[in-house]
Image (cartoon, rainbow over all chains, first blue to last red):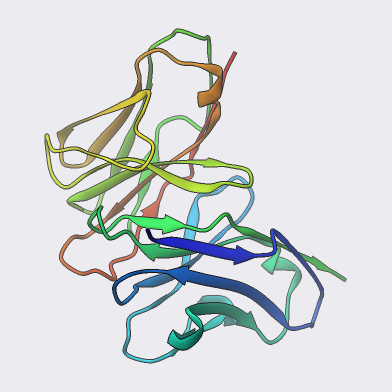
Length: 114
Length: 114
């Protein structure tokens, strides 16, 4: 069965520090992978998606993710955190039995301190 | 920009009531989805629809039904609300045809069943 595992439900960094949010997936077919961000009291916003054209994917707000097939991972990074990056982040993989639906990880809450 | 609108941000209902959650999208998307979001569980797919009058069960359909009478509108129905259906409900839409089409989300409806 497909699944997405996000390691660490909470990650805390200082402003200016590297952000690393971990995501591992399980899929029996080549995966389509996504990262979404959710700010308080809002819906989910797409950060980036993996489309197989390149293993390093750049997204909005300075985030990027690298697809590593051998590790079944799609970790999200940002070189320098800002206070405005504080939010909840979700990794997702395309659902094999539900068209364009996604299967989501449980989420990682990012806190940024000054 | 795609706009997905959920008619209510907050709802409080009593146990046993019939509850309707409404969602409208303005981009002529054929695919629409209902998820529920719970702390520590991420987003879970309840139902989805490929087209008008079509519906498919997602991963957790028990206790829910849906209606899609018009392309732009997708309603989630709780036939007899129970306290374990207290949750954040998120509607989403996407274009079909491409496996890397992202989902576009509304801002969510926070339902409390007392």
